[in-house]
Length: 175
Image 1: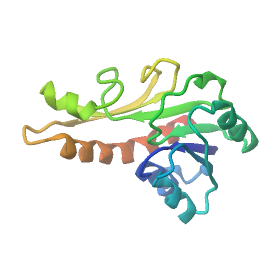
Image 2: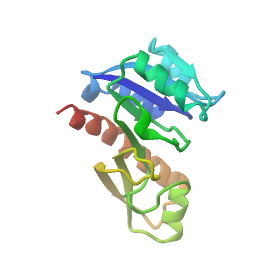
Image 3: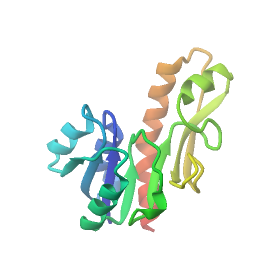
Image 4: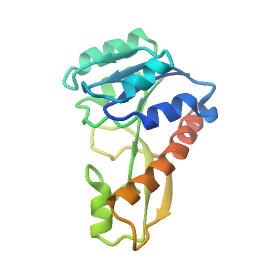
């Protein structure tokens, strides 16, 4: 399976997908990013993966690139923009969200989990649809929220879950 990955941030999920043995039958052929200071760019360069900056508003250019690279699956790995028309992309698209959807769609999930005194949170991999964080759920994994957790400790816990969950979801889609 030829993967195209979209990033905005540091790129830890990107690198995890590239290096994870669960994903070793996949080839990451292209990384599209939308920010000037995208940390995933250095990670892509380290692995010799082509990377192209495309402003988030230029979905037509993204679609063109994914078609040209014959991508079979598009993986959003910290891509922090809502796509206007995900159904127009040439391949299925998945996203990972740092909550147990359908709870806490959108931003500031950890802050809201703490504020609402949830006992559990986690991560969800889902199909991207036109409605924010509402596509079909592929996999979820939860973790306990400690009374000592704050936004930063919870973010670290959930990121650790993301690093195991995302490769498992990609593998599941191969079957």
